[in-house]
Image (cartoon, rainbow, N blue to C red; front, side):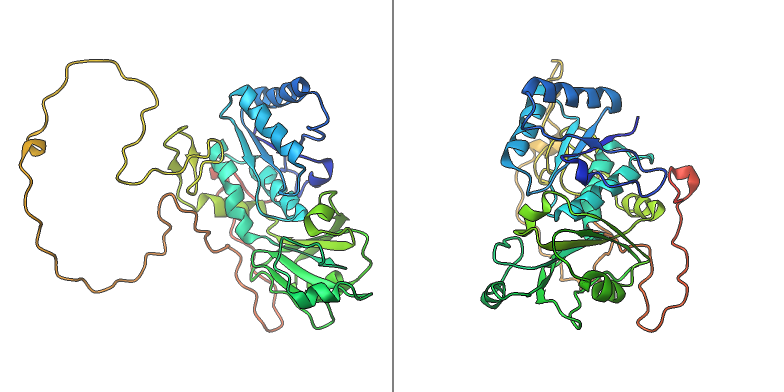
Length: 356
């Protein structure tokens, strides 16, 4: 069975993007259920899937987050990853669906869980708001706060990847992706056509779909009078190529394959190069070996300095343990009227995934 991808609400489990998207595990109402029932439900997921990745929002109630940590502690399991990206609820739901797409591929649980941090670099998430008076996720200046009290004011806000805020209007355009994407729009209580009539033509998505705003959107944005939007990469072969193009390392603590500088399962980071790796278990005793002759040599004086070398161009290849997002496979769109874009590069079917 593939690794289970779980969300904390049914409205965060978006419909499948394609036929290979695995269903989402919904851990709804964790704070309202008895603790033993929550532990039993999570244990069942582990028994069925082996590993569990829970994707949850920073706007989730504190009781839900506390229950997640309690369940993981009671199970004493290193097969549960709690992933809380700094994304609006709709962007988080899109990211969870991308992980559900990748769960059908031949990726190890550690690489799949680490892929969430990588794929956030290719999401453009924001919202059209009727007020920014209670918005604390994006810097808001005093002028925008004052305009929030004026009837009919609307604000275009980009939360990720770079925060932007502007007064919405026919000429207002937020910085968008430079590669081919789809757009998902979630409508709240705000009535406006700015997202579909102004923003979407400027971003030129290959496709646009609409859904209802998640319940956590009002808490995240500070108002329920909103229209949330997110641009994302929909193609499974492109996602697979992005993840597999990053160098993989082995977590020095739990021993699973990961990408980046943080293990999502045990939260361990790579030790400094000067520190030895910690021993996970005691080794059997035996005769001690004599120290090497090099260790017994007296200290020598400082070596003469080498002559300075000319600077060299930086190596674009990411270093092990660091998560540098590679350039997305889709080619940037031309500024002039575009021609039919070439199809994105497809992965080798023998490697585990192809788009459909």
